Image (tube, rainbow over all chains, first blue to last red; front, side):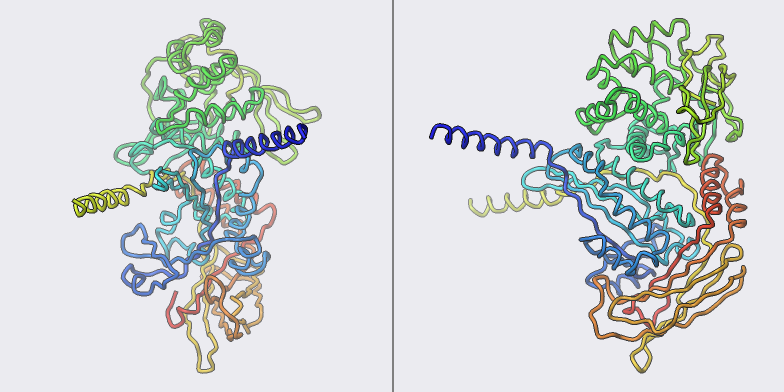
Length: 446
Length: 179
């Protein structure tokens, strides 16, 4: 009898434990809709023509509008049916929608979902079929009107504000890519999913006057953090992104108030100090390298991000929190920050960003006289250069993997793969012309 | 007193409704170039004839280079059956225009969840020389890094001799109008 009681108590405790833990790790609810454009014309025409099952979407031109029908997606077979019935007759962008739907069920997304901020929220994925509306001469604003995005909505429900994300994937950013659109659209989904996890409230005009951003553009601190984090999430699924991101950093783009951009050598003195952290590609590389190079690094990065996730996220705050959360990894964090900012931060700037830590001090001491310039130089814009900027001295291994992807690494490739080595020297455009040699870290490449 | 409380309650309710849904700013657009369309598809005429059959005319035109090995196929919602057979075209030269007439009859079944429609699709081999030449145009695509991405994509498709697949979809409730 006593044993039975004990057993019942044990089951009761187990049930309570399950309820509590499932609450703790409850994944955000996700649903998918399929939307199709049925008609286009002037706003007046479309307002008159709109059926009860159609939504009017006004075009950015202010004169025209689309009628859009949306249906909840219940299964892959139903989605196929909605797009035309069989897989072989899908357009390139429709195939992209189908593959994105499949990709959205990837186990790694399920593992990320418990990191969705708040409780009671949801993610709605809207797969927008623009079949027949890809022609930008006939539909000049179609790219603006259906650009992929994550829209965050705060809804007051049951006495609290819940965060709901609406991720739109349409393929308008891949028009003309043919079968190459599929991988681009999946990458876009991963990027937007990254935005859904992030609470950063991007600054008004955070992307500059044109509201468009390049990977190597200097933008506002929160905008560059949000984009860097979203690109990091993308790189978790597409590791080759790291090389693409690094390659984008041959120059930095600075938007001109009168429109257009000036391009400068990334370490040419146009940006200094913490401003390096206002470039999304640099932020993406810092996240990616911390995740890749620290033991269990992906979990550490995501745990620290989730713990401090708030409206005022920015890379300097993230790094300070990261060092506080994992002081044992402060040396590596300092090393990565130093490498990815091209050795341009002074010891004082490094300490301001990373905070007080014995391991940060140890790293800074190891820098010796190889401290960053941290000073302001004048530079003149240049056209994007074919000749890349040399960032650091050291041995770089350049090799091509079995899939044809080129890699630049600071350690040799797996045995049997041919490689070229480069031993760089501080370039005259790297911000080290003060005569101080940069640190010997070789990761940044030409 | 009771009226005052109800009024206050209504005001609070209204205020709650006003602030109940706030949207945060969506991220700005990540810059990317697009390649021009290779093929233009346009429905030039649509109507139901006296026998209740849907008649469509679709105009095909190459908008970039010489398209080859074109396969024109049709899909429809289950309430319609396309009577026109699959068509093939050896090539579609720049500037040349082809018109295809499509006939669809009603099946008596219910339309799909998204309505009653006919899809006209075209699978074809684009003019990769023209695409690569376009993607290499530094005047049209001045950003070197973004242009390179476009070029790599075009070259990768070209190496695989990948066929493109475009389509236009017509919703039958718009018969009589042009798209």
